[in-house]
Image (cartoon, rainbow, N blue to C red; front, side):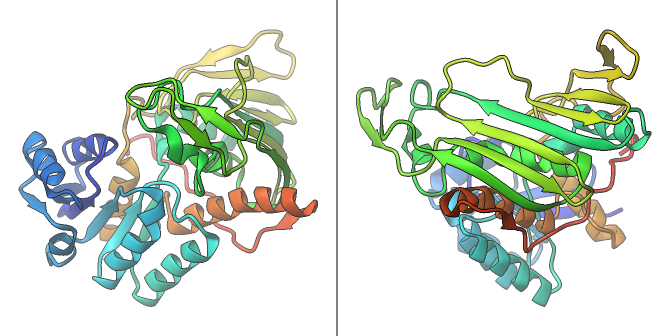
Length: 360
């Protein structure tokens, strides 16, 4: 199969692992990178032997490039996705798909109109850890899934991040920062969601940066920093999810799945590996399950590779635009439900992604 030629827009910190994807996966070839700051694109191209360092306009105009990986800041995600689609490129975007639900829907509408593919992060659910959990569920080892929990508990970013203010501004907060990992993993394991509700709060109106170089600067908090959501799945299962920047310490698990015949402790959905633990009806202890799938190290870019393979074979990719839009609406829905004191009925849905073959 001929490799799909790929260009990267956005050469910040996360671009490094995506640049390596061209060397890890057989189906993609990264031939160009671009950034508003051309010097950053040039440095990345030299570091990873990428043939072309471009301006954004040059990259979008290159007829060889079939897929654009959009690694810009979240506020620019929708705009760059639309520019890429208008240029006739398929697009894969870092999370979230867009800041607003309206922009997310617009991206997918343009893609459908132009018969182009949209994909998006996170792709950690394709790693060996969560795919092992999926295999256990699909094989019926815990029976029918009836419930789940997901917890992302932290004290925020101002103690370590060099420039943490954007985490507390519009488009930020713990749900939009980390929620995509948890919700995407839950949809992969259980299926799509039909309605949500939740409660949110801004615990501290102001934060003080204690990291360098902005030590002592104040951050005005504009978004909720503690979010509790309830997710009603289409198959009848119910999940509780909490994402927080207000918790000093916690012993809660990342994700647990509860079935009629057993339960699974799912590994951190922000990683690709394990451990995976299973407890079946009648057992007194949890057993650690050997991982059945590969890609247990940092394999960001596997979603792009799967998309490229699907493009060549005329198939549906797993980290799809419909999945990323569904996740985006779920996050907005939890916030809106809290604001209005109601349940929020989802207007979007998606298919549960196909399990990844062991020999992918």
